[in-house]
Image 1 (cartoon, rainbow, N blue to C red):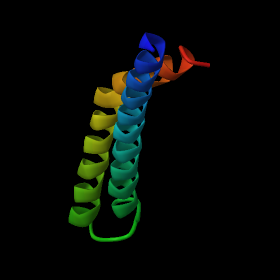
Image 2: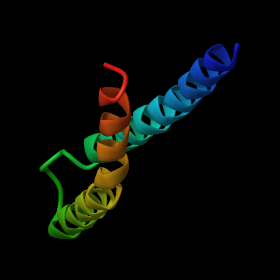
Image 3: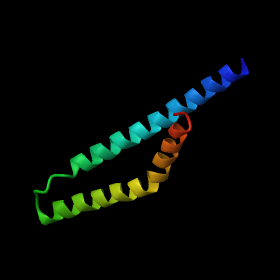
Image 4: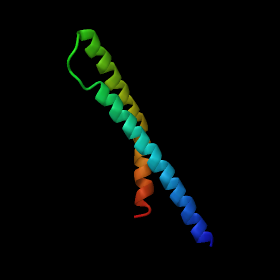
Length: 77
């Protein structure tokens, strides 16, 4: 029974980590897509570039979470 409870707990943790990663990737894709158009005035393009730089910063800041999730999954494969 204890092993079953541990498996349920591990699965809940997996589902939470998977959901967090998926939501983060969706938000990053939406932000990038909103700024991927290369047309506009210089000021508009500079604003888009600034947003993309923020996305890159967030990616580098969250890459550890993505790698942690990857390692978590590898432990069960």
